[in-house]
Image 1 (cartoon, rainbow over the protein chains, first blue to last red):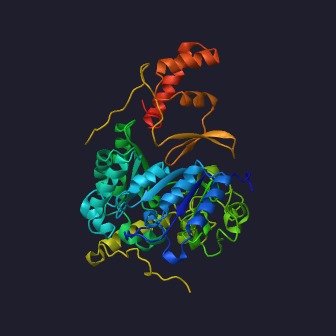
Image 2: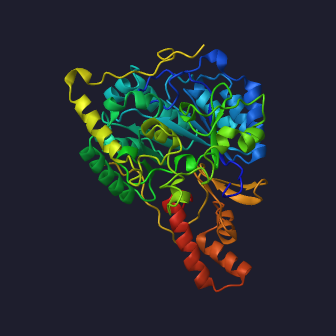
Length: 373
Length: 98
């Protein structure tokens, strides 16, 4: 190890894979777990307690749609009792009357609400859920009425990139403190639908200008976080802040993972909470240690002056595009196969130009890709 | 474009507080105070922490400056410049409410 092992700060808890929306870029794995594979209430509470002991300060409660868990209030209360900052990441459709208020009472610190479009027709089409946009507006209103701070999350791709100015107005009109303009990351379902989702270069450039101007104009009014699109980048993102460096995630069945897409790396096997404690997994799991720090790096990462800024970028993207999880993230201009990213952008534009391909998404659904026996 | 809110500017009469999405807590694992916000965790130094703890929704900036100058046995003017700059920066990031 090139640096001492630090305790984790953040944890993403994917409480369930069930979701009323079917967004074609979902970051969940293609093999979605059914409800009968989910951890029960007490196991999640034990896991959260161990996470707090380990040093976790923030837990993002996500899914699927986390509000489908009937015990969500209890889980929030458990975290709150340990002083852990709780962030609920919700699609905001179908939340029963009184529950948002109950989350706030249980100690929820912050709510993040996704909008698939700034226009109702876009939101409903991308999530494949009629009336979704209206329900989300209602959820935002209820969250504000319950006194909850609000982030609007806007996943961006070719079908809504022109709506970025409208997303900014929408977030302002909802009284959000924060807006995430998050360009889709091509892992999981988004990788399957990449040709359908990849924006044009000119639209990406326009978007960057719009976001920069809005950030300036809205200083002190609303924070805008901008997750830039990898395929158009010069340097890679420090994925998860570095592999197993200060954050991790847990799948609905208790599998503890360094990131969303880690299970796409075939050489790694992952451990479940229960048979092993969280501390043991964080410290000793071979999968967590596989790409920790910088010792695993090959060239050009190994001698790069940015190696402790980018941490080699995304291991899953290296796997998906370079075919080697230990390769430099091809998003990096120093990657020997960086040019492949530009080719993939062009291929996607070519595919999208064929009218019969337009919006032929593989929508995210349990069972579209079946679990292994 | 909608402008439902305006950027707040620090004055000696401002009464700063921490917004609901920001919490300070002591972390026994790292033995340090952490400022928790929706996506980020900050590790303030002692002086920043002394300012943030006085953002109680009752004290004016003028009062906070006088109090810190007394505590640190420092010139009020020098303290004022640092406190105002700090609070403006944190307000601009929506981490402090004025």
